[in-house]
Amino acid sequence: GDRLRFEQSIEDSVKYALVPSMTIQPLVENAIRHGISKRASGGLVHVVAQNRADDLWIMVEDDGVGLPADWTNHAVEGLGLSVTRQRLDGLYPEGKSSFEVRPRQGGGVAVELRIPLLYADASAN
Image (cartoon, rainbow, N blue to C red):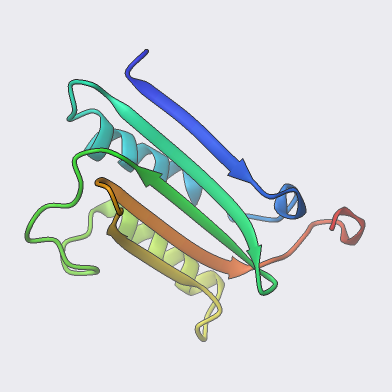
């Protein structure tokens, strides 16, 4: 309802880039379920996509409650994050992708991923 605000900042050069299915959705769902829904005032989920050095860089961030005090990257990771990480590692082996979850400056969580920038149709870029 009115408690959830959603923004997207998608660079024109990546609007038609290929993104593996079911990659962004679980990240947005996590931001809502674990960050925004726990705040009485609601909050913001922001999705950013940019071309960075010929890679597709995507960030999903929220201004929700943030990460638990005992959270460490990889060690305390839910099913959605671990499946997303495993899929990216499988699709883009040998370090051709990255996936990072970190506290967001100002509160909340930021999830950043980087994959090769590919297009279905070469004329789209």
